[in-house]
Length: 215
Image (tube, rainbow, N blue to C red; front, side, top):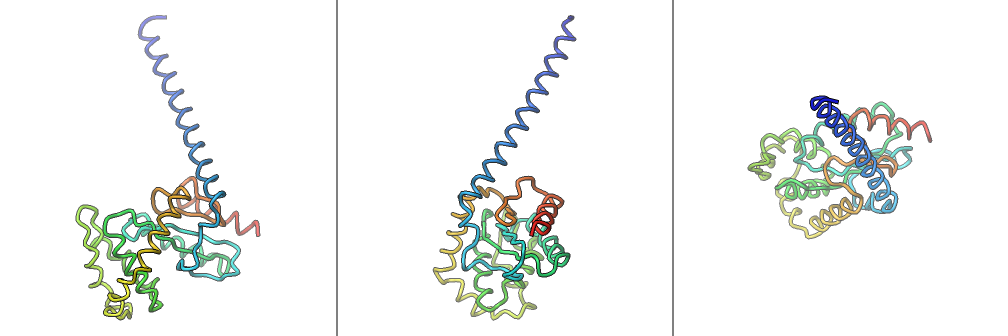
């Protein structure tokens, strides 16, 4: 075997070994996340967690989200379309995972809005206005107030309610639960307690549909 052939063979072997290693690592990470979710199933939902959908729904989607997360914004209408496809069969529970700078401020706004029954309206507004307030280089969450004129929120009351210590305690609890469940990025989805270990629209749709059919 000449030198060039030996180099080519060695490179090929290294690529194969690397590929096998990557697959094994991915499988290990998926198993770790699944085991973590199973061991900490009681942490998936708190009694204060915002939700929509019937309590009798066959499928519960728990989403750990960050209001500054572009991917969370992208998945938001997709979740809505799943609920529309299976009316009455899906319940969505929202959990906070404020990984981005400034997101904790918007979480406080969302909790204050929930006191007025406006959580979902303010969440929609926060996603729509991400380019205005959620720059990762220079977040300015206070600018979101200027985008809330059409949601019917009592701004003065909301600004006062944001100062309630319970708000930050809920965020701390959600962040602790996210860590225990192995959530390291957003959005993090769990469907009937099963983590979405292979991320993507189609993967989430398939997992939801499988749970709908199983019940």
